[in-house]
Image 1 (cartoon, rainbow, N blue to C red):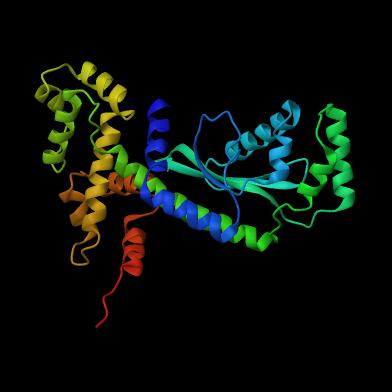
Image 2: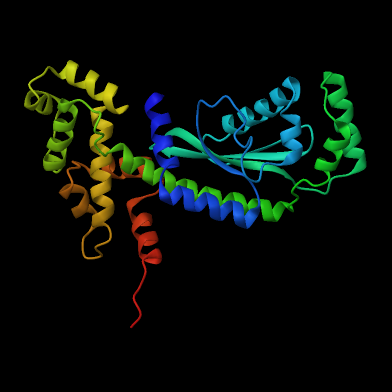
Length: 299
């Protein structure tokens, strides 16, 4: 889990994420946060575009707990696709999963938005709930903030979430790339193992072979590799081979079967399964998408 949180933090510090966050918030006026799985605070608190109404609710323990519960429900429902939940005040929160292969490692979260215009009747209901909880909030300020909440129609919000879903898939690819890169803090044996994989990924590598090359037992190598990288050696090797595959798929003259065997996969069935697990689509679809998005220079 610590490796996953570190990976999300590295993506958070990346230029591409920072640029997308700024663009998304400027165009939608909604808050956006990239968070790890384990995250026990409100993601938009004291950040740009935080809904002032939500900020007031966060000031008391009971209403803050309600907001945290909603966030948890949203991420719990986002195992494979975006999940949207609505709070007691009628505001929506959404989580979009970021994956490393088939494993969720973090979420893009946004929301604090109403999908229908605030009303006096709804605010009375909100006030009643707050009073039942015994929360001490300035109701006059809360009412003013409530009626200034961001409102989008369902179609607009759905389009914004679709943008996040597309970007989430891009971040998942970046997560996969980062997971295959060497870190300076890794033990020398792990760096040597990764260098060995880089030079021999096309060969039918076996655990025993690489452990022997590192002069350690297979058990010790597996234990240390998982501890240092958060991945099994087999998972890491698959990611390296898929990254090589993605580069080769840009060459239209190479058959997919040729590419699969050239990067070290021993069967097309295994290749297709691993590629889909790591990218979310088949090699054929990936090649089509790459072709359609590739920039063509002016003639």
